[in-house]
Each structure stands twice: as C-alpha cells, then as structure tokens.
Image (tube, rainbow over all chains, first blue to last red; front, top):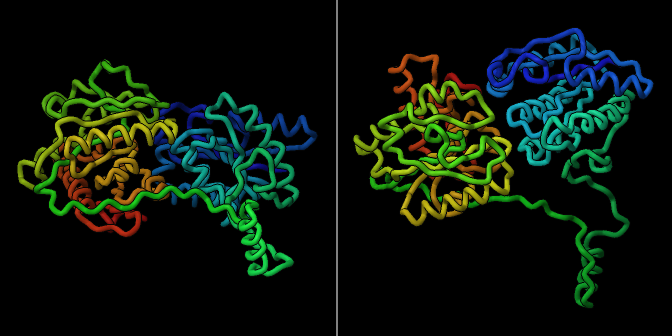
Length: 347
Length: 84
C-alpha cells in the first residue's frame, strides 16, 4: 500500500523553532517517524511505500490555505491509499495543521486520513467530528505507542473499511449524533420515563448533551477614554533572568511586572516561552506586549488609564484546567484593581 | 485565560495569529495578529512602519472592546489583504 505522510520541520529532521518558517517540501521516501510506521507495517506483513510532505509549523499555521492546496496536489499526484498526519501529540501549531489536513484532505480527495493528538490539544475539539484522530500521550515520548495504533488502522483504511470513531478503542469519538429508529414513538417513551421518575426510578437519559462551556459576552466598554486597561500575555515575556522562575511551558504559575520598566528599558526583558522562536520578541518586546502604542493612546486620551502591571505566563503545552485557574486568579486581581478592559496577546 | 477574565465580566480582546483556536473556544472579541513569533509586530517593516502598523492593530482591538458583539468575532487589521 502507498501512504503519504505529513510531518513538521522537527520530525523531518530539518531543525527546531529556528526552522519553523520552512515552506512546503516533499520527499520520495519515509522520513523520521515515517520510518517507524514502515517498519510496523512490514512487521505485520504489509508492503508499504511511504512518501513524505513536510512544512515548518509557523509557516503552515499562518498559510493553512496554501499548505492545504499543496498537500491536495501532492496527494492527487501520488495516489496513496491512506494519508497519515503527524502524530502531533500536544503541539499547538502542528496539531492544528494536522487536524485541518486530516479533515480537509479526506473531504477534498476521498482518501482516508488518520492523525494523532493528545487530549488537551485544542485541535481535538475542533476536528474530532471530521477526522479520525488517535489518542496519544502528551509528547513524542509516546511515539511508539501512537504509531502502533496508526499502523493498526492504516491497513483497514486502505482496504476501504469504514471505521466508526465512537466504536473504536484508542480513537476520539466524534461526539456527533447519529439518528436511529426506535420501535416506540418518542411520546410513548417520554411517558414511560416520566412514570418511572414519578416512581423514584432514575432511568438516565437517551441523549447526553455535551458540556459546552460558554461564557456570556461581557458588555462593551462605554468609553475607553474613561476606562482602565490592563495587558495580559501568554507569550512568556519576563524580566531578563526570569526572577520568578516561570516555566517555559506546561505552566502552573503566572507573574506580573511593571510596564513602566518595559517601556523605559525593553532590552531588560526576554521571552522564556518554549513554544516559538523568541528572537523577534527579544529584539523588540513591543511585538508581544505593545506598551509603546498603548502609552501613545493614553497620552492622546483614547484610553483613560493603564493598569501599571502586565500579567504573564507561558501558554505552550499548558493544561486547559491550569489556564482557567490562572485566568481566574488574574481576573480576580484585575477586578479588585478596577480594571475595565483587557488586551491579551497570544502566540 | 481570556474566557475566565470575560467570566468576571471584564471585556477582553485577544490578539493572536491562531484566531481559529480562540474562535472555537468561544472567545468573543478576537483580533488576528501578525504572526506567531511577533503577534503585535512585523519585522519585515521598517521600525517606523512597524509602529504605525501596531497602532492600527491596537485601534482595531480598542474598537472591539467598544463594540457590542453577539457572537465570537474576528477582527482583521487589513480586511482587504487578509484571507478569512
């Protein structure tokens, strides 16, 4: 069978964050984890030919449409039986791109696709209904286990098997409702349930509604000229030397530092974020925390007041639960300090 | 984090290049930034042009804070140039 495999610049062996702007390239052979996939398939008695496409994470995330077109063209030219994306584990940009490619390439070309993501990845929620996604651990340390499941699925997909994610172990369910015909009409079933409830019997529910987290939209600021604005960032900007020892990622703590110092001496700050190439922000921190322009806007009266400290953590690979906790801790401080509006910058 | 600050009733605008993530998470006010590595900057511009661009970005962000939004909304700095 023939497989087209997509990876990023790191798994292609080209480089790390410094090569994240690499444009789309292809190779006639398996690369990196693709070689493991080849071996697993051959060990199971399948002949496998793998060709590879790869791209830098930042380029791909910022040019999704182009990468999709190039990938589609490559897939049409190669006539694979299956397209494998990643796996991307908990990687932010790479995960998004793998999810998008898995969904769109399948939709556009009809070729079955499979990818792999960690449960905390935003891409799982975004793509689980449209793509087959293997459940993986948080990092490439779990590559062997993830590829083992991928290698088990690939021959079945190549045979044309219709895999139901909700019935398959080790894969994220779609959370999509599937219609089925019951023997009794809904009205009869509803009365049955009601009678049982009246008799104190809890029969559960036919349909479990998903837990959709939604926060009401805050009211707009009536007039920013009379408001206090605060700056928050998940881009990891801290005073040089990282005095509070904030993590480069998988964060559990946040810090806050004076904006006056950032304005007066930007070179005394640096980004310790482990998820992107920080050279541009280190050259000019206003590319992440735009205090220069905010200060001008205050001087002109467009904004009333600036909250004197900014709030920071490093967002990469940070658990959603910790993001929520840190967010609510920061929110409490801001509310107590009478902040009216927040500008939050994310990488 | 933005959602938790919004939950406290404080209008929040998130400036990010990964606006699809913010949108799918249900953040209400989103401005698309200039790139993962320099979300409120653009090293391909001269320093003066960059500050001018940053200004337009922030003005878009402030506009979103004063707008009433009824659904998660992505604001673009240059709608004519940026693909949705």
